[in-house]
Length: 232
Image (cartoon, rainbow, N blue to C red; front, top):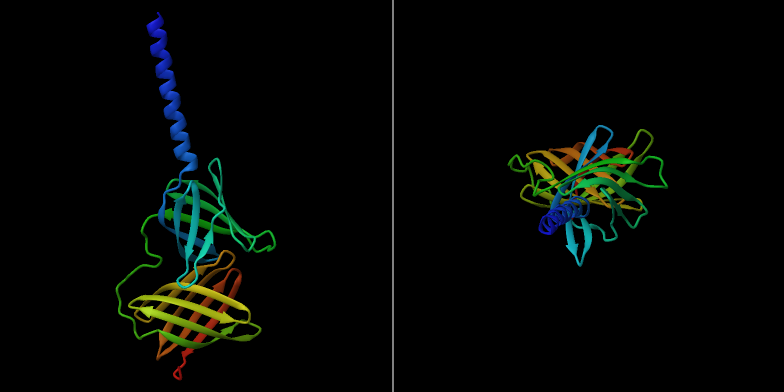
């Protein structure tokens, strides 16, 4: 009887240990490496990329924006919920599994939020690579105009292209946006996320100018035209 009791006790202990291990793997582990996420801005799906690193039992997020990355090092796990805060007071709050997340970007000071967020782990392209040669070399400074229904704003667009890959920055008033993406034939598409602003640029390159372009920054929409500065 004593041996049978010990055997049963050992089985119960083993099952309990396995259950605890499973629960820990489900609710505390997040796959490291590269991830791809999509923010939803009205009818536009805005893809971004980020990396997850586990360093000294802490989890670090780095959103990749070409020239200016955005980091969050104070993430908080609570059950199956993950909160990722940013310096601007905004935060992502998601339900997560090892290789996926779904939730929203919140800003307590802005009624426009939340912004829907969906992410998956893996070496996934930000935008599809259809392997079409660029219609021109996009590298350089571009004099841009941002239009709304009420006004037109002067802006500066700086692009650095290597093959189909493009890194860019948009400057206007006191705002700076860092983006990256691709040019496929005559279609330029860029996106970025700086912790507060989700941004998306999609335009066509015609006769050496960027036209028929749309720039979205959170809930703001602009038409964009740009001409390359030939004096640089």
